[in-house]
Length: 237
Image 1 (cartoon, rainbow, N blue to C red):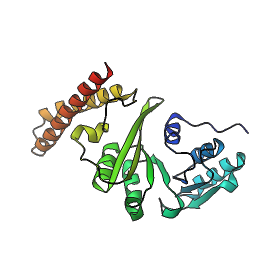
Image 2 (cartoon, one colour; image 1 turned 45 degrees about the vertical axis):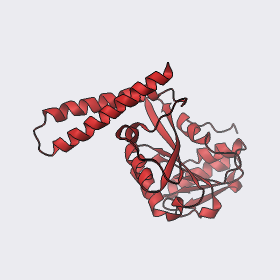
Image 3 (tube, one colour; image 1 turned 30 degrees about the horizontal axis):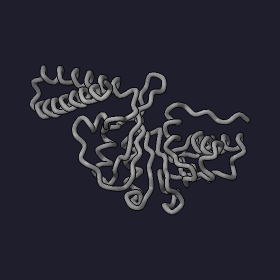
Image 4 (cartoon, helix red, strand yellow; image 1 turned 180 degrees about the vertical axis):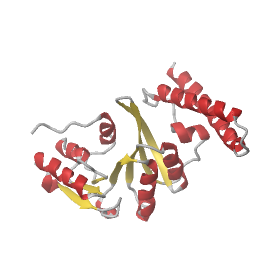
């Protein structure tokens, strides 16, 4: 059997799993990530969970094809309910919306204690997840922006701990720093600026009383994103 291949977004997650980690993949589906990590010798054992029996059965089949059934514990359950905190130190939660990821973390109170590392890859509601993490006892240690096909995906590494408040632009684009390796960031900041500009144009024509507050919010976001874009462009020179 040929070694399993990962898509770019799953490869982005794999790069953040340290060698020897006690790893759990929540919402594992086909179990491609834990199988790859085992085949590459990054980890020795893994836990793979899913809410539904169908995806979990597909995960078992993937592991069986690669001779790894005995090294993965397959567990049926909602979010982190099937996982005990003392079993793991690195947990991937990917392939679902940001609100669902936040709900999974909120339900498991132990996630806000200890030394666990969470590798999060929201498909939607990315700003909402950033703000939720910052307001609920998590610190985003790093982010990676990755392109797969025509879509840009966000991978966040979060741990329990205090975090500085996010500015309006940072909530949408993530925090940036000099020397950050992010080849898609210029494209993404431009995309966010264009979307915000179009939304502002519509709101400026609106006569609805409730839109005034929204207009102020988007104006602040646009100004902060423009500041971040200017700063980023300066760093790239």
